[in-house]
Amino acid sequence: MIELINEIWQLKREIVSDDYDHALYRLAEEVPMTIHEYPTGTSVWTWTVPEKWTCHEVYLETLDGERLIDYVDHPLHVVSYSLPFEGEISREELFEHLHVHPHLPDAIPFVFKYYQRDWGLCCTQELKDSLTDEKYRVVIRTSFDEGTLKVGEVVVPGQREECFVLAAHLCHPHMVNDDLTGVVVGLDVAKALLEGPKPKYTYRILFLPETIGSVSYLSHNEDLIPNMVGGLFLEMLGNDAPLALQQSFQPKSPTDKALVAFFKDINSENHVGPYRSIIDNDERQFNSPGVRVPMLSLSRVENPASPDSRFQPYPEYHSSHDTPEIVTQARLEIARDTVLAMIRANDSRTYVVNKFKGEVFASGAGIWVDYRVNPEGHRRLFQIMERCDGQSTVADIALELDIPFEAVAEIVAQLEEKDLVYFSDVPVVTDPHKST
Ligand SMILES: [Zn+2]
Image 1 (cartoon, rainbow, N blue to C red):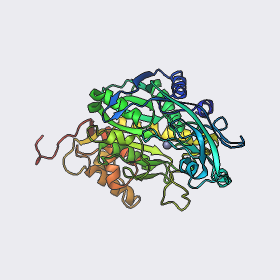
Image 2: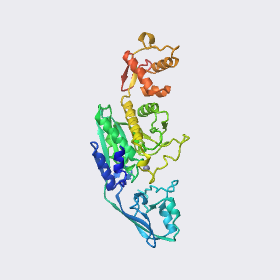
Image 3: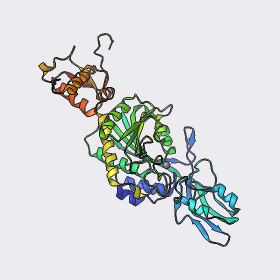
Image 4: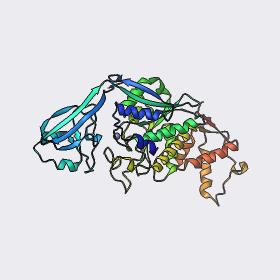
């Protein structure tokens, strides 16, 4: 994963651009991928696909010709989708268009104006503080052309047409954690799923430009939406913070329950938060009205409640400091393994249906736990058996009792072995007061 990051991170991956395309074609060498294209000007629900943007030359210099800012030195020196501009302007006017990072004085910020068009430059606070001349010369040579927005899709066929969507955004010039880390983790997950065994759900793994890529894909695949049982957005997975799982707009959805129940077990430092409480990204498009796919998001956004928490979502966010130095292969591997574990838990999601009536004669079935030796285990066994009524999944039971997913899975497996329960993909009514 790190090798691929090192290969492509410096590409200027603007939302519709040649470098974005190069990065996507590079990913397509790794796995079988369909590339969907949406031409500039295409209406996608309430949005329109923007132009391809190319930056040819950008610099700021003194009237004596001393070069102060140069695009050649760093692509973040220009606002993404900046209008072209050339002229001699006052320092005051320059400062209206010159952006700095809010808390990193030696970093160049990432600023984008995809839709509210303006011209703009970015530099370090240190450089800005040194600008004392009355006038400066600005040159921004950019062009806006017809192009195509591209979305890469890897499909892992499952036993069912119902699908689970994983997504990550490939845009953002010259940055890594946001969100090449999500991209490489998604790619590795795709490879693992393709190796088999064949999953229950079909998996669609999407690589796209942020927001507009999701809207373009969803609006052109409306027929797939009813079959999307859930999703997970992957982003910011390489920085030094525990994993964070953000629930979907429908926190009671079976997908939310399965992913959350399993995630809580993995590492006690991991934290779970409600929709829009951790980080906002493309999961919004999937969760929105008219779509309503329960898409969660996995990141390493710092937990504001943690005493070690620094800047949200992480200190180097949207700046020239977001480089391979702040991510590690080990953290990416943990993220990948967590994603695989969570989606496999979701894949095996089934309702636990009682074949028994009344309380099980546990010692007769050979599953009794001696309360004198293990009072906790004894109580748990009965608490779990009480909930095996065809209306709850393993995740539901684990969340309700606030005990590990694996502990519940182990006990219901034992019950199945004793022919006391069976598993069903849909809820089953066994309460004689309720009709089937
Ligand atoms: Zn971003």
